[in-house]
Image 1 (tube, rainbow, N blue to C red):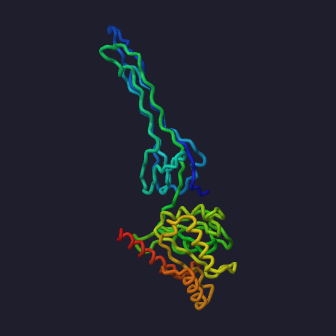
Image 2 (image 1 turned 60 degrees about the vertical axis):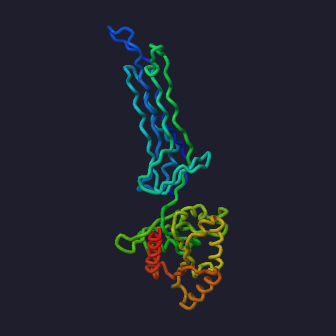
Image 3 (image 1 turned 30 degrees about the vertical axis):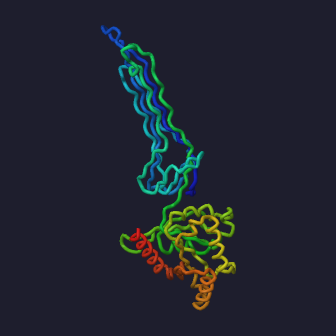
Length: 339
């Protein structure tokens, strides 16, 4: 399925039904008086978060959503039926903006969360409403008011506890395959990962966290080069970033310079994202000797002036991945206790 995380749609609430102009017409009841009923209210538009969707692709094929109009009033003081509300289901993690003003209308972060986006129109009044002691036979009614109409921009930001960050082919997809049941595509060429993947990492009974893998970053990503810049927003909800560093790049690149380029692109994209807690994860340590790995890791840590946690793994052989998973779980538990 194609991954779609940004769409623009139009929603329109139903208009209120018009009031009825009517008089009683019954035998033996002369001058029966007005009996025109009110119209019904227009249906409103709601957007609701649900868990059985993982993309916004359905909105690529339907861009206009309208709620039902209210029914007009009828004689014998009969009120028109209210228009049915329209409920639009979206994935948890969707942020809704007014496309014309840029205002944030809602941020759906919980299953079942529902917000009113467009209010239905108010019903019109029948002529019975205008009856008075001085106006016994009113011929006045009012039309229903139109429903609200909005052009919405919806952005999906996946909900994950941990996000993977790094160059293409650093081994991020292999890592998420190693620690979870997720099966993203893995191949020996750049940008194998074309869209975010989520994996649930279980460390014990009833204990787990969600890991997100996004397409790799390259130099110039913050200016739109490559794919990663488009998906960096999916890391904004995470608690922790894992900066995956290839210890033995196939192109012979310098891991220290590559790590610096990723950190620079992260800062250019968002200072808030750059300030999130981040760990260094050196991958593919099985491709070099222990001495070479130690020297290289020490050089990168010193070059970055790094003081945070450092892990050594081989995602393909699952070396060190269990210890990494337990450390992440401990970090999340500690964070929850502090909150």
